[in-house]
Image (cartoon, rainbow, N blue to C red; front, side, top):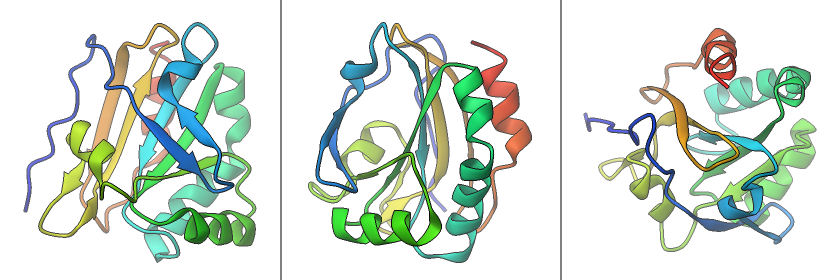
Amino acid sequence: MSVTILPAVGTVAPGFSLRDQYGQTVSLSGFRDRSAVAIVFFPLAFTGTCTGELCELRDNLAMFDAAGVTLLGVSVDSTATLREFAEREGYTFSLLADFWPHGEVAQRYGAFLPDKGFATRATVLVDSSGLVRATFATNPGEVRYLTAYRDALALL
């Protein structure tokens, strides 16, 4: 099993630009001085644990909104796959395709599992100044609990 080493709290979050499920480019720098961001890496669309986790986040978006945090899901899936996934599950937050170069952003964040070809379940909370405020991760197949998100949001 690969060891996940996420960015250290207090460091500048690695920048990125990825396409969302609608083909629009979303850049981390675009949130600077506007919004904190929760970057939620997940292995693959349409899998049971990923769907369950993202549905729980969908059902609790008010918690993120109240904290002034924009939710961004990131996987190695294509934009077309992520669009179908979002439409089927009613996700109104952005799902970003770390499709090509394959898993490059997940690699920069220490969340990529090269032996699997996808990201582990990792979350990085970035404040509006671009600094990492909290991180947490679980192994594929293990869920991230909503309490971990609440605890992270309380750090803002």
